[in-house]
Image (tube, rainbow, N blue to C red; front, side):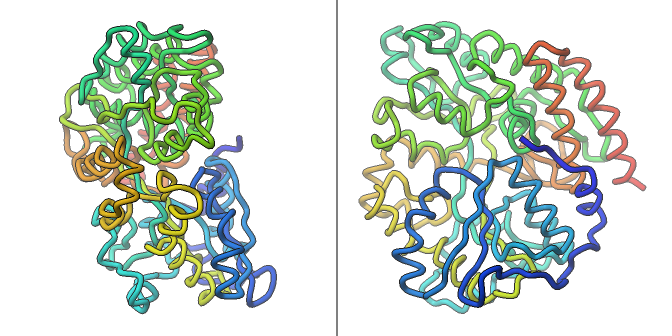
Length: 446
């Protein structure tokens, strides 16, 4: 997959390109919008449902472009930062929205949400609203679904081995269990962990491990700590666990590959996004529906360690179809859309984690009985302002909320992926990362 583009990273830092410029935005006329999305299961679902619901009701045709996470990040950053205006709507996350809003690259969407009485903006979960707001307090993205992270495991496999999973395991307990269940079934590995390079791929789970092991990317005063003992201990633990009991080809395995591995019975455990549970519990796509247990993110030195994320729809200022784009965004993030997914595709597939009301729907509560309460608990326990054992210079559990982190995290992850693949060492990777982080710190403190 493509990784961060240096030229684009420079634009992202400058904050001056593409602010409200022109550009083609619509692509297919006033009743057509172009939407760029990450290729996660929830986005596949909306593609299936759009024509016979949204387009039928509004006459607005939606042209979707769906890309893997790393490729999406490059494409959308390049489009928005350069003011190309190719897309009217895009999915980005809690990392990008505040930065891009500060660069004046995005339409505020508060006025659209407030102007639609049926939308019920007050129903949106507070952590999601906060993560998608600018410094002016306005919303610049509407959450499609929200998530934290937790540990997913095969209840039946552990039971056969006589293993009881703690409700809040330590990482050492997870490693011990992974060793015991490795090979429990033919071709089954103990655990799947992301090894695919990318600040939002590998480093989403790995940074939560760093946090709970006592490490951090930067201290409060921007002192970089990438090669500090705690960061090294966490990364070595993660890499060694993958090497000993992780999935084959781990250096190319991201969210999608691990989802497939667990759903097809190829691994016994997986630490990743809470949003994966809906797919795992859908018997149409998962061989392990009904066999998965869910517990809170593993910890070491912190009480909780789950991340906080939302994939949200945003509207670049370059769009010429703001009205139609806003109609799509409101529909895609509405209560009505959740009901549509539940009725048409199954209630476990609802893009949850963004609305309080979702967790009161009887059909959803039944379908999500195995994972719904754990998901809500993980989201509520996530603390972007204080995710580790020391004060931080910015908000963010699994990322540092500055534009430079996109390039920094991705470059360090490339070297760690090489270590996973046996082409380098963690110590070398983090020593190189420390030098990169020192350059970032100088810019922050000048």
